[in-house]
Figure 1 (cartoon, rainbow, N blue to C red):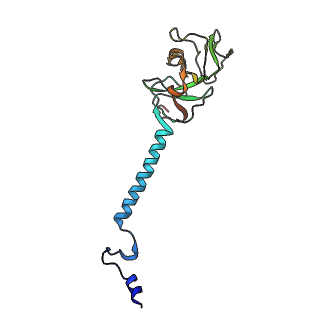
Figure 2: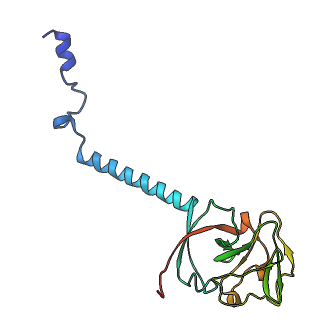
Length: 187
C-alpha cells in the first residue's frame, strides 16, 4: 500500500477514538431527544398562546347551552363574526362567553314583542326566557358602527351583556370565536 494512502486511512492521534460502529453515544442520543421534545413543546405552546385560547365559564349567564365551570376552547384569529356566533368577550375584569346578536350596520331596538334587529322581531329557538332591556344601561335604538357587535347572554335575566355595557369593539373587546366546549360538571 502506498504510504500516502496508509497515512490517510490511519486514525489521527489528536482525535478521540470513535465508538465501535461509529454510532453516537447514549448521552448524545438523550440530549438530541430532549432537544426535540423541547422544540415540539415550545411549538405547541406558541400555537396555544397565539392561535387558540382556553377559558373557564365563570357564571350561569349562558345557561343552559354553556354552564358554569365548562371549559371553552376558542380561536383567536377569527374576528369576523356573524349573528348567532358564540364569542369570548373581555370586559376588562374577566372573559365571558356571549352570543352575537347584531353586527356592523344593524340596528337593535326593543318593542312590546321583545328584541328587534333591523326592525324584525327575533325568535331565538335556544332562548327560553323573554329578552327585555335593563332599566339601567344603554338607550335604544342603537345603530352598530364598523367594528362593533351587540352581544347577549342566553340566560337573559341574569346576564351582564351589551344591554348594560353597550356595544363591544371587535378588536379590543373580543378574544375570538368559540370552537368547542368541554362540559366539566353537571352532566
